[in-house]
Image 1 (tube, protein in one colour):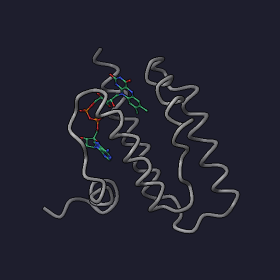
Image 2: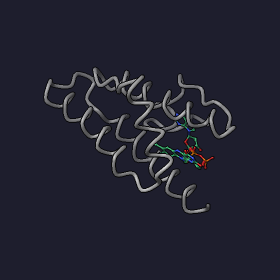
Image 3: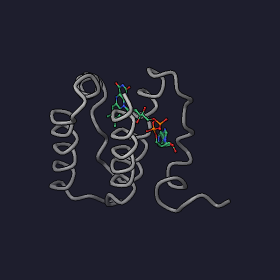
Length: 106
Ligand code: FAD
């Protein structure tokens, strides 16, 4: 349905932007908080199938909260897994900062 797509786009904007501005050297507390936020998110995301799928992925691939760079790459990988499942093209994860932090150069 259309609202699943709209919700998805808005949510990815939020998730990737949040990762893009996460600290490069997070404190132990910030690392715990971000791990918790991602897990809690997967329990409340208002698309039942999407949330269930995300919870399963988190089991095998827990969020890498060790730095801004690692978290951004982890989020990109998560999104690419979903892209693959939906038959969408893979995003080049070397370009996450361009897309979500610095802006495209062209
Ligand atoms: P989106 O996939 O929403 O992407 C938005 C923009 O992000 C793209 O235009 C691109 O510039 C950028 N982008 C794309 N891939 C990446 C990447 N890997 N890293 C960084 N940036 C990227 N929909 C379903 O139908 N079934 C599901 O099970 C499902 N699960 C979801 C789980 C989660 C956690 C979320 C947030 C969304 C889920 N969705 C699901 C929605 C789906 O992922 C899309 O958001 C929706 O289909 C709209 O797709 P889109 O093509 O507009 O671009």
